Length: 373
Image 1 (tube, rainbow, N blue to C red):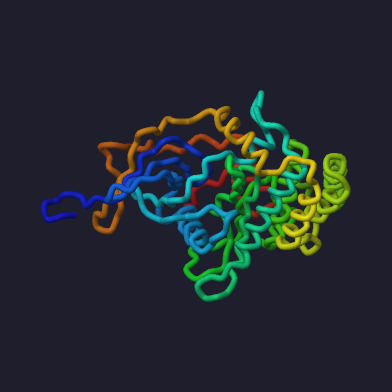
Image 2 (image 1 turned 90 degrees about the vertical axis):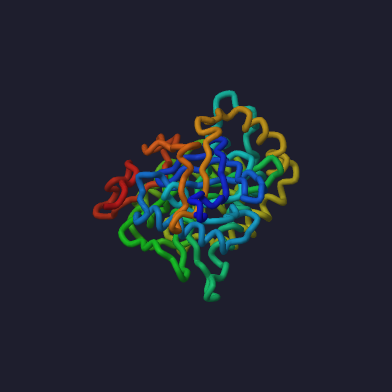
């Protein structure tokens, strides 16, 4: 604040539309303007007002920004800054003009996009596996690997652009080992029920093998455009479920792809291939399918049409969040914007991110977590 009592100008974020709504935060497309007049479009992830500054969601948002600040990979969304707006934490990320793969797996009525080819599905798996490998292997400040486990791999967290770019989004519930980490995960499981591996549903170890299982579910859903459903907990029932998926994959893409899928969906974590192995094998399988449409060509044809067909939520258009320093706190310019202090609508579909308390198998499995007391 200046001697005359005026606020020191900071960055301004003019909201354009809502990009996504989660249990903890909402992501907006915003036009960011610096004090010097530099403008560009960004994705602004703002913590929902029901989660206060001391909540687990708040610490996870800050951890997400710190994790992504370390991860520099062409298949991982880039984070530019972590700041406070209206007393809430916000993350400034690169804006990716495109669509997520949920609209490919579950296309809207009269979708203008053709079904994905097996080659395209394998290229998606290649890119996501490369991102998971990089997230696990990237060193932290102390030189040790971050060992990031994403824990919420699903079609709606994989975004593609018309230029054929593929990015993994939303590391908000990721687990990592790094200095300065705030969130501590004990008896809580975060993620989406339909993509959880058996050991995660049963409260077992959180490892990268769980992400590879989820990626296997994404693969079969891309091949069949049908939801896989919640994983069966019993080994025999789960084996029968996987056998059905493998048969569907073989019919759609042949025995080699079906073999890869079966190993990714193995009941025991140590029987699944690593991210590096999946990346290498999926790339080779995709490269052999030269007669099918590739990811880049599919995106160039389909993404612009899908974007036009997707209804826009522009209810926040024109509202402005202003960053100003007052006693070390960023504030909102209430003359230009007041965000309602209510929970946002539930995300579409049945695969919202959940927090599961393992006081009993499946307890709270169908409800989003409440803010911690």
